[in-house]
Length: 440
Image (cartoon, rainbow, N blue to C red; front, side):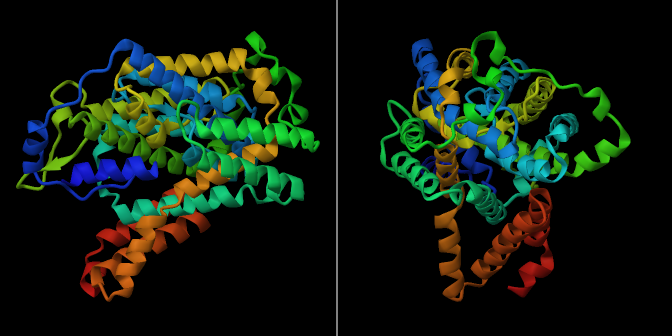
């Protein structure tokens, strides 16, 4: 079954692929399967805490990519987690700071500075709200597996290249980052996330070699803990002018598109795991969408996008850089026994406690070790197997595979060289072009 194959792929690669359009009869087959039992409150709580630990290092790393306060990623995750509960995001989806948002924001900040970052996030939230109000969540089904693989390949490459300056700073920095990568990839992820162990072990080694920690290069108050660690709301009033909006809007469009896409893919992962169809699109004999979650005043994909909009707006207003639904952490949540709102509440609460209580420990993290975490994330982001399989099929004189390879490569190159939103839109247009299908 296509849906079951999709979930297995997601769990193995920790990234999402869009499945082909499933036929209407698959809905009946899925409905006949026995859904997994509802997890207990204790299991949900422990799952949420585990997810929070797994996201701690990545949230700090995303802050470094954007170039903002190191704890901004934690508070962005708190804002997204809380909004997902209030706004009605698909239960079980973990939303927080994400590389797919941090990388384009980092590129924007490198050109225009960090002062406009809150405006970019706020505009992205507005665009997400408009998309939700117009019911555009279903447009995600236009994104094929090849387009998404090309986007993820470009994202992984951009993430890797963003760490070159840190890795090239000294042989010791490269060695510490390499140690973090090795520990992250070789150690088991349970009961303590391997990335967290790798981060702190590599940081200890970096300290022994005299490498700078995050606290050495940041405002000391950022890692004081307690109420001093709470985020500081930015002054958005000077940014609300036509010139600033014109500069920020292109980046906001790309971030909004990507955020909606990954959030709905994460929701689809939960659908498949729970044998439900709240965010899975099926097609009837007239090629019209049949959506199980559409009986109420708002269907679940729409409410998920509106919750995403709310979370990013809150994050922008509190000095964060937003985020989206996270496929890897959603998979971890499901594997750890979480599937409902209790696990999301435990995750958001734990992230807030990390900022208030563990901030001094976070300040001792080595910048080189943090680069190692991001290198590992980039390796996981690149779609190695789907890309190699497409290349192999194209070399075997498979006409359809050659077409799919062209779509994948064009999407990846445009995403990397021009922009993520432009690359995805161009990839979708190329994939759907009738002339493209006739040539092959």
